[in-house]
Image (cartoon, rainbow, N blue to C red; front, side, top):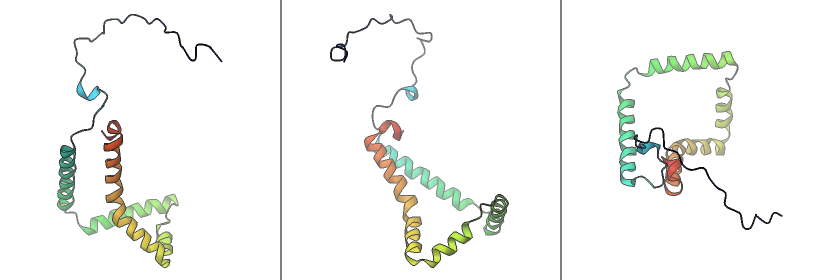
Length: 131
């Protein structure tokens, strides 16, 4: 109901003061991102990171016995915390064919497609959040 809603009156502002660190330039990573990064460079970076991940995964030489021992340790902690429901859930899902097929498909595709789709949407629509 205020008459100033449609036509606001400008207010006086304080005069700018000299910056404390005016001789220090604003570093590029402190600036707000207003544009998209180079797509080719981003794809190359994703490929390089995935290649490094594959090399590290192949270099793991501890083997299956060490992995199974770590799994037993985690399972013991879950039992101690009373959060061990995986065996029950696995047996329940295996008995229901459509549910088993859904989770097989979900596992085989989800962790590849969804992160790439999210990165694509962020790259196209929200470059600041993408970075």
